[in-house]
Length: 205
Image (cartoon, rainbow, N blue to C red):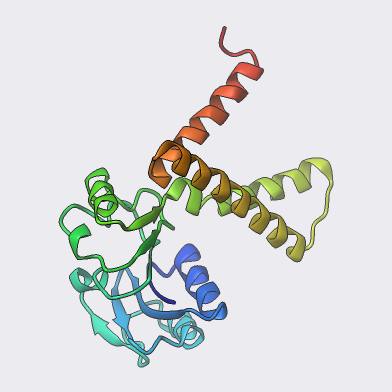
C-alpha cells in the first residue's frame, strides 16, 4: 500500500508514522512550506527528525522536491489531506490518482470535488468519520476527569480502534443499503443521532 500525506502537523505526522509502522510506503509528504516525494518510500522517522530540527518538510535529503500542483496527483493508493480546508477542488480532483481519500483535515474537499471523485469511483472517507478519533479521545479524557476513571494508553487506543471500526461499519452498511456515498451516510446517521438526543432531552415538542 502506498500513501501520500498532505500536512505534517498533529494529524498528518502521526498518520504518516502510523502508516509507515503498519508497513505502508509513504511516498509523499507536504506541509505549508513545500513537499517531498520518493517513489521508493520516505523514511518517516528521519523526516520527523528533520522537521523537528528545521521546522519544515522541504530540505529533507531523503526525498525529491515536488510542487503543490503535482503533489495531490502523485500516484498512490491512499491520499490523506490533513492540511486544511478546501484543498481538493474541482480544479484538481480530476488529477487525483489515489483510490481512497481519507480526510484527516476538516472540509478538505469541496462539494464540487466530492462529486467528481464519486463519479470517478474514488472512495472518500469523510472528515466527519475519518478524523473523529481526536474528538472521541478528548471525550475519554473528559470522562476520566468527571468519573475518576483511569485508563492506560493501551486501553485508550483499544477503545478508539473499537469505536472507529464500529462507526465505520454502521456508515458503510447504511451507504450500501441506501445507495449513498460514505459522506452522505455519515451525515444521515449523525443527524439521526443528534435528533434522537434532542428529543430524549425534551428540547423539542
